[in-house]
Image (tube, rainbow, N blue to C red):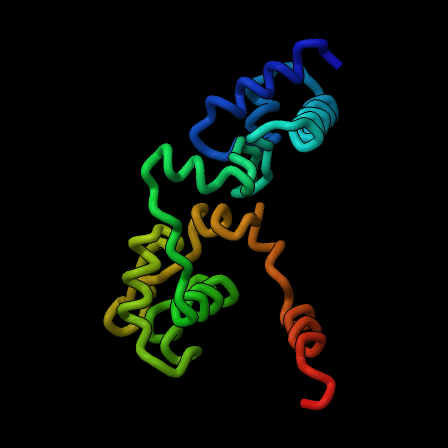
Length: 182
């Protein structure tokens, strides 16, 4: 492995505005084998997680990025004058799950899945950039079609939608959480 490869990758991840994928790094680092890049990223991430540092490299949104470690969240938010991230309401989480598992999906389809009107919740999720409008459905009224966004993946710490738990996994988790006498 190139002796400066790790440092180069560190610089690229540091300056990247968005999560930097292995594929993008391979394009930028012409001629460097993908296995070397992956090994350097893994080693670099290990260096940051093992050391006494306030930041680490996280994988999310299909790539790698630097983030502050959770232990320093309060201090960083105070410096940047950022209020605590509002947690999503149960209605927002339910709507987001309906979109994530059934996308692309229209507002009426989401409302039918949930059994309630989802207009306000969709507006909120759009404002938070967790979902996006990707077009219109060829159906009466040409309704808008929604999908999850890259911000959704970052918010949940996922690299792709493939990492969402399956229905079977969710059922098993929910069964494990139920009290024995219920």
